Amino acid sequence: MTRKLIAALLLLFAGTACASADSTGGSAGSSGSTGVTLRVGDQKAGSQALLKAAGLLDGTSYTITWSQFTSGPPMLEAINAGAVDIGGVGNTPPVFAAAAGSKIKVVLAYRQNLAGAAILLPQNSAITAPDQLQGKKIAVAKGSSAHYHLLSVLKKAGLSFKDIQPQYLQPADALAAFSSGTIDAWAIWEPFTSQAELQNKAKLLVDGNGYVNGLNFQVAAPGALEDKSKDAAIRDFLTRLTRARVWAANHQAEWAKVWAQETGLPVEVASAAVANTVATPIVIDDSVVSSEQQMADAFSAEGLIPGGLKFSDYVDEQFNDIVTKGLQ
Image (tube, rainbow, N blue to C red; front, side, top):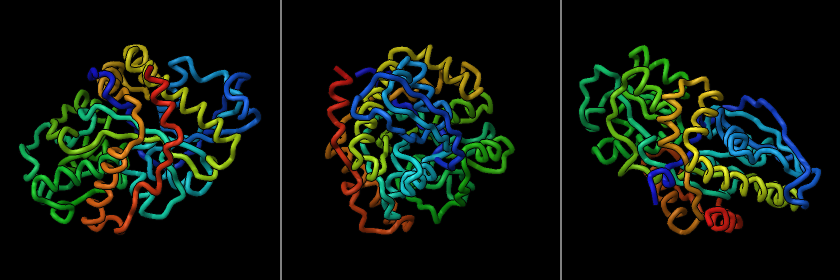
């Protein structure tokens, strides 16, 4: 499998609800979903932009309303509250949401290139190894994929969160802090990784290789899955997303142009980010569940979430056939 196909379309900003609602609809799609409104949580240059770029946004028998979030945890809060039916997040938000007893179901998985996950240092930093992070101010979005990346890096260096000064910041605030020199390191994902490296001359301490599983998910509200019409709409939506991700892997230049337009980032930044973040859809099998369980156990051991979480309770594998059909 090529580097292109194992990279994941990283969900940009992991979660505050700033619900900008757009809607699309058409006459085709699953007939069982006719007249349904599917409420989708998204991020800037996320699923909506991807589907549009791939030519797969129109022609649904149902209406889509889009709500934009800046990071995964708040998106899952909206799903738990019944305000959103489905949305995409990284590998860590479902762990934190499940630990809080949220009503969520992981329904589709993707695997990304681990190079997009990064612990970045300012250009003039004297830090050369992870064990030198001790005592340092490190920015990270709480409950995001970067949160586990940082935990994993610290653990392998013989450190814990008690040994650093975590600065829990959303990406935009963390970028400002990084640019002003008020933090010593930044745990982050694309496109911020490429943006900081190209525009701020940031140095890479480590990427995700050897530290994280590279998983991203679509997560649904159980109530939406129990509604036959919405379940049919979700199946069609996930089918389109799977096809769109395959398209993105093979049309990186076109996708990068759309991403640049959607984010306002320079094309060179978007191109670098896309190379790291096109995603391979994968089935949710025992290895996926086990990997997430290991993450949950690690957060629990660190005292960051309660113990006793059984991640498999928050998984629904009914859409696995979409992946196998979509990659044929």
